[in-house]
Length: 142
Image (cartoon, rainbow, N blue to C red):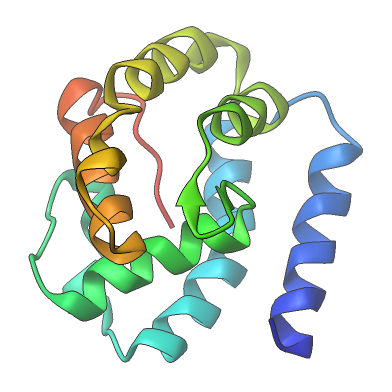
């Protein structure tokens, strides 16, 4: 993790720890820093990743690794694997109350998807897609 990543991680953690949850818009706004950093690291454009939240998952390696980057910076990847408990903790900490139960149910439903893949980029991509397909209304992505 380089200095910029670490700084962004600290900012996101500080923002998240000082509040019980965020509104949907606050959550989107806070993810802009992650998006900018991960776009540059994975050589993706807005055309490739800008509509993930709307269900547009382009099946390309750099898009898959962009999603993994977002998950890594959100601290839900531990030891190069998606971590179910960390995902639920992030939802509890950051998501608006009216979205929490539905998102946790989707995460529960999709938690074993990543076990099918040895590659963290593929595991992240297919897990995110599963969560979107299960719950498009409450899906938020950078």
